[in-house]
Length: 257
Image 1 (tube, rainbow, N blue to C red):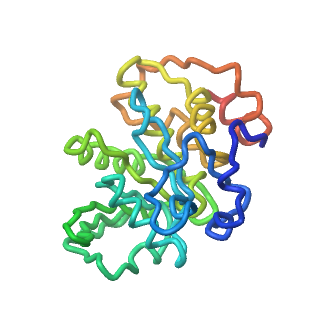
Image 2 (image 1 turned 90 degrees about the vertical axis):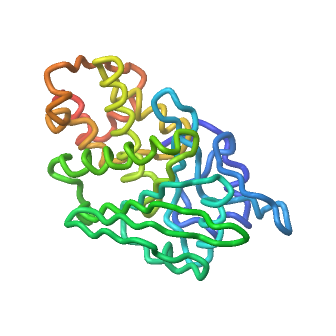
């Protein structure tokens, strides 16, 4: 897919060694900048600010931390005052931080919720939402659990309305984009009684390369929205998403709406 913004910093050799996937570049205009410690490249992390519904910086979409980037990952949590971290894949590196401890852990069949305390000079409480029911190399057959999971996160964030939600999977585009798109779709339906699914995906891709891949299935298939949303949805299609139709699967899904 053609890039829609510059990614010069992400292409620098100092940053490409910290990226999981070379093709997932970070747009300069929306990249999350860390503080500079020793050299100008200290501010780089593979993460972008992503707008939510009526909120320009509701989310941070990031790649899953590598052993070489996990300290920067937690530095981002601290510096950006992140209070909710959403993990949509298995990523053991996120737990391997010496100055972080699990205070509470609630393990359920489809997700686990943990409270962390990251300490430097001050303590920083973080709630970690780990969705464990996403099939490997596939998409959920229904979104019942995913919507409930999203609602739990949304309720928690009422306590922190001005801080971004940090969402990551492995590359930070597929499952990450799906959850963010789902949240935006639900909020748009609640506010407007209509949803522009393709417009949402297009907007996400303006802020991070390749956001939402085949895993847009649960967002696009409105049969799986919760009962409170059914029966009151009118679709507002976007005519500017021809590039999304390149996938036969996506064309079928969108056409089925």
